[in-house]
View 1 (cartoon, rainbow, N blue to C red):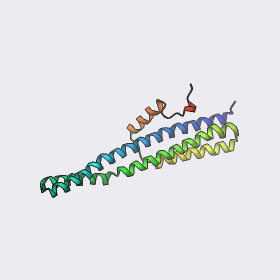
View 2 (cartoon, rainbow, N blue to C red):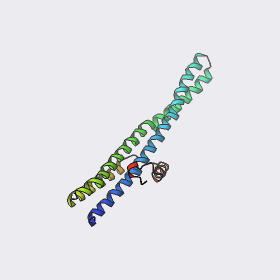
View 3 (cartoon, rainbow, N blue to C red):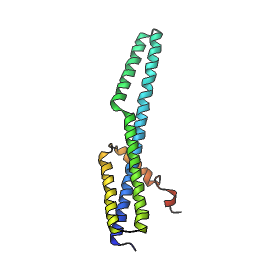
View 4 (tube, one colour):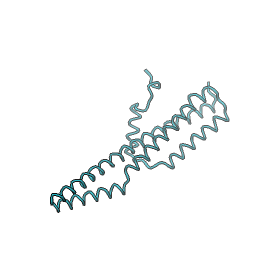
Amino acid sequence: MMSDLKTKVANEASRIEEDVDHSARSHFNAGNRWKKYHYTIGLPSALAVALSGGAYIGEETVLALILAAVSTALTTTLTFLKPSEKSELHKSAGNQYLKLRNQTRIFREIDLEHSFDEDFAKKRIKELGEIRDDLNQNSPSISRKDYDQAKKDIDEGRSTHRIDTKE
C-alpha cells in the first residue's frame, strides 16, 4: 500500500502527464494549422508571380499587373504572419511537452514504484511541475480550436499506448 505522500506525488505526476499531453497535442494541431496557412498563401503567391511573368512576356500588361499585385499581397501576408516560423515553434513546444510527459511517466511508473525516497520524490515532482510551468509560460499561444481537437483526440484514445489499454 502506498504511503500518503507517495499517493499524492503519484497523483500530481498523473496530473502533469495529463496537462502536458493536452498541451503537446494542442501545439501539434496548431503547428499543422500554421503549416497549412503557409502552403495556402505561399503556393498561390508563387504561381501568381510566375503567371505574371508569362503574361508580361505575352504582352498582357493588365493581367501581368494584376497577377503581380496579387503575388505582392500574398507575399506581404506571408511575411507578416510568418506561418512557417509559427509552425516550427508549435512543433518544438509540442516535442518539449512530450519529453516532459515521458520523464514524468517514467518517474511515476518506475522511480516511485521501485525505490521510493520521500526527499527525492518531493524534489523531483517539484522539478517536473516547474518545467511544466516554464513551458506553459514560454510556449506560443494555442487556439481554443486546437485545444478542443486535442482533447477530442485524447478522449478517443489517440494518445494511449497499446500497453496501457485494457483488453
